[in-house]
Image 1 (tube, rainbow, N blue to C red):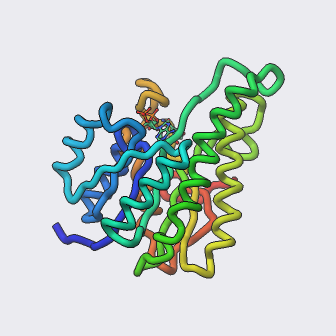
Image 2: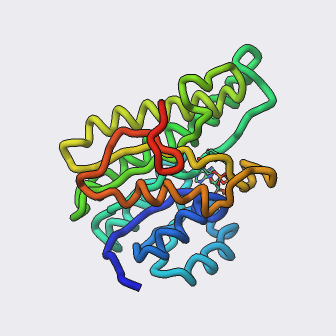
Image 3: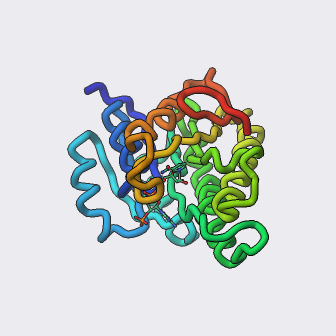
Length: 235
Ligand code: NAP
């Protein structure tokens, strides 16, 4: 396999879509830093992923700044740069309440992982992303539930956190254009994972496909877009 000398970091890589993203990027010849919030719970996944290429592991809880800073130190020491950041970690498809009766504590917790998690990860990793030789790609794993026309009042924590993540994607894409850093959002579709359930229509590999495609855009590639099935969709 040709080694691309590109370094990618994936959050929540121990299971679900994150695992499939890490596997797919390894198969394409990138060095992948698989991260997860618990090293102990990730041993089997890390062993499996290491069969596919040049895999590194780093503990990373996207809600904890000290964990993020330790991970930044690891990437800096090992590589001195980062080419691809995939903000995949996400929680809580909260079907049991709605915008009228929402438990706002739960909504806040959902925002902590789904929106502030990617935001503070991007801020902390930015100096390393700016050192990418190729112009870095940031991919925010969002959801169709975050689209404007999906705001019908259900899954309030999840939908509004993904709506905000989409807005953050646009803001950062504009701010980072002059640094040759692209920031895009991707909806993976409905995927068979712990979150999506066994009845979902896509395999984790199919869910990861557009995320990997977006992660590999070159310096002429689009920024500030929202994609599903390798096609732009409306915010
Ligand atoms: P999943 O199977 O539930 O996996 C979620 C991953 O996020 C796990 O690795 C989990 O780690 C990690 N995570 C949660 N909180 C974290 C934190 N604070 N720090 C670091 N990692 C954390 O979900 P999935 O279906 O693969 O979803 C991945 C992404 O796709 C999410 O952003 C989700 O919103 C999005 N998405 C999924 C679907 C779908 O149908 N599945 C549809 C649209 C969008 P632990 O193992 O430690 O819990």
